[in-house]
Image 1: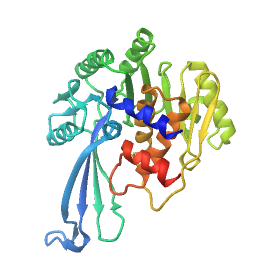
Image 2 (image 1 turned 90 degrees about the vertical axis):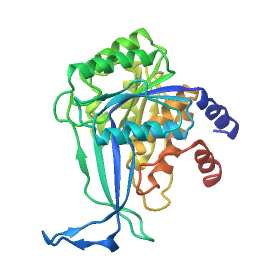
Image 3 (image 1 turned 135 degrees about the vertical axis):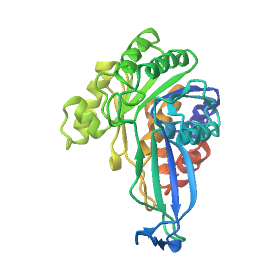
Length: 342
């Protein structure tokens, strides 16, 4: 991609309106200073003293963070949080992001706020080291009242945006935002609005999704198509191309150290190898950075290959950000593409 083409694509980000519908969670980081460790007089167990607490949107919120870092003009969060302390923190964190609109974000006493609590050992001169996480999840089905609110929000926001990103993060089916009712209504929505760019990603797999732009990893592609998990890159390309042709929509596959792959409905496939590592990495959030950059670039008129180039660079930037779930701005992408690897 030439510098001129990079500028043409990214210049359009400020005019874009993109909605993120999915499971927003609170990423709460507890920074622990090991030099201040004590022993509890009552239990005799080690006490880890937290010296700083950081909170930021996670899961679908990580996609939102990346869209905000790219300077997307309007970003609509469509999801829910509980009326609890974590929900207050999440709502406040979302408010702080540039371009974010919360017109369709639901606060409800019927749900707990999905939370990843991440203790970090932070020592001078060493990378942060994450301890075992404490997760707060909903284990019961999402109530019909909340689902109705989400369905209304999805249809309303679809009339206002250039692209819609679906992010299904929960492990337990029917307990989050993207329930089977949402998927069924999405099918009706894309049938009525075939020109709307919809990019879907689900950690439980994309079975039953309507013909929209699908983003997945190698294992998810294998489950969806019956492909052998140890298939060659050529076999992965063929499976992705067949799926794209069948759905009439692009398919994107993340391949870890092998990079990214994009298949067009016409049967063509583009593969970009991953950038070389430049030190210690943390892959958390890389897939979300890919989703955000693919959607923004495609909505701004990029080709599949151009979108892959931007997403690949963003992923490389993000995985080298330790102790946080990172983002990549347009300025960072430009620096990385045209100066780091010129």
